[in-house]
Image (cartoon, rainbow, N blue to C red; front, side):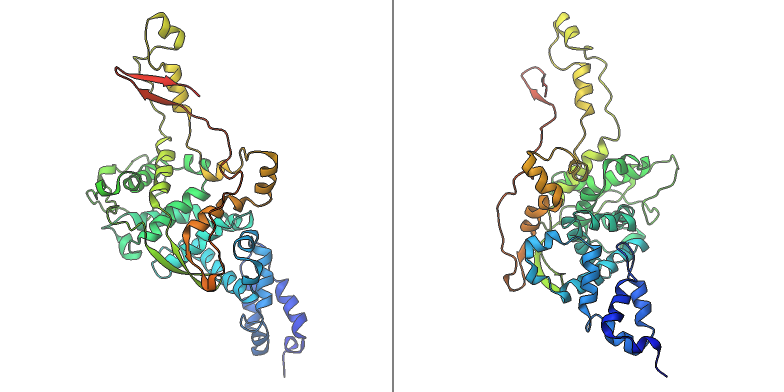
Length: 384
C-alpha cells in the first residue's frame, strides 16, 4: 500500500520540504524526508528538484555579491543547489572541528568565498558553527611540522594562507584579547615567520605537544624556542588553483599570506603593553624645561595606545561620505570586490569579466597614528 506522502502532489511536497528548514538550520529535516519513500526521494532529490534547494539558498546565504560579480544568469537553480550542499558540508566540518586533509583545500576556499560574499548571513553561519575555534586548531595542524598534527593534516601552502586570511577577516579584536596567554604566544610564534622576509625564515627546534591549540587555564606557557614552525621559505605566492565555485571550475590565485601574517602579528604583539622607558621626560613641558628633545613618556604612551585596525572591526567605523556609507551599509561585501577580482584568473565560459575599477569609499576613512623619524642623534616624535 503506498504511503500517504506518495499521493501528495509534487508542488505541495516541495512546499512541505521547504518549510522544514529555517535560515540557520542544517538540511537534516530534508534528508529525513527523502528517506521516507522512494517516490518522495525521486521528487525531492537535488537532480530532479533544484528549485527547492535554490529557494533554501536564497533564505540562508547572502546573494548580493555573487549577483553583482557573476550576474544573475550564471546563478542557476542547479548552481545554487550545488553550492548550498557544499556550504552545509563545510559548516558541518567546522562544527566537528575536522582538520583532516581530505577535501580540506576546497572547503577552505568555500569558507573564504563565503567571507568575501558576506553581507550578514554568511558570517552568522560561520560564527554559529565555531569558525574561529576551528581556525585556531587548523593553524596548529598546518603551521607546525614534526607533530601528530602533520599526519592528520599535511602542510598545504594554500590552506595556510586561507587560514590566516579567514582569521584576519572574521575575528574581532575582542576574540584576540580573550585568547589565553599561552595560546596567543604560540599563535604568534607560528605565524611570525610569514610576516618577515620569507627567505630568512627558518624552522626551529621541534617539541612534541598536544594536537590542538590549548584553551586550558594553565599559566604555563610554551617557550617559543620549543615550537617547530613550518618554514616559510618554500611558500608559492603565485600558485594557480582550480576550485569548484557555484558548481563550476574556476582558476584562482591564492591570496598573499604575508599581508595576513603581518596584520595578525601586530594584533598579537599588542596584547602585551609596551613598557614606558623610564629615562624619558614626563611630558613636552618637562622636556623643554630640561633642554631635552625627542619623545616623552606622554608621546610613548600615545604611540603604545594605537591598535592595528582589524578588518571586521573597521567595517563598522567611518565609511566615508554619506553616499558611500549608503552603498557599503546596503552591501558591505562591495569592499571585497577588488580582493575577489585579484584572485580570479579564469572563469568558466568567461562569465566573470575582470575589472580594476575602484569602488568609491572602500578605502575611505580617517588616518590615525604616530611615527618617529630617525635624525642624526636620536628620534624626533611626530604627532597625529
